[in-house]
Length: 95
Image 1 (tube, rainbow, N blue to C red):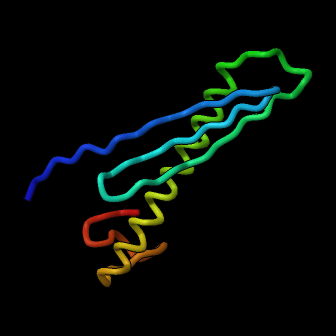
Image 2 (cartoon, rainbow, N blue to C red; image 1 turned 135 degrees about the vertical axis):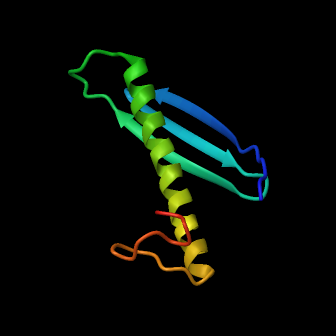
Image 3 (cartoon, one colour; image 1 turned 30 degrees about the vertical axis):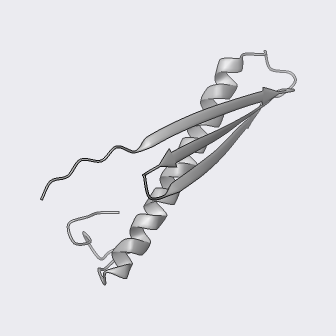
């Protein structure tokens, strides 16, 4: 069984007074998830906005990824499959 899906992501970055915030949104067509991340520049550090953007975006995407993994684990458990350390692959999926 094969299928093709398109999930859309958006990443919004906001910077103010040495703090960069990021919101990563994933729209699966049936669910929308939002990940959040932030980066705080030490006042003694040089002002390089790209670094704050990269850190905040990476953290927002990591948050979004963790949410997806958590949902997948609940779904796997919901179909009665094993999950957790030491139980091996779950119906062919390894979490």
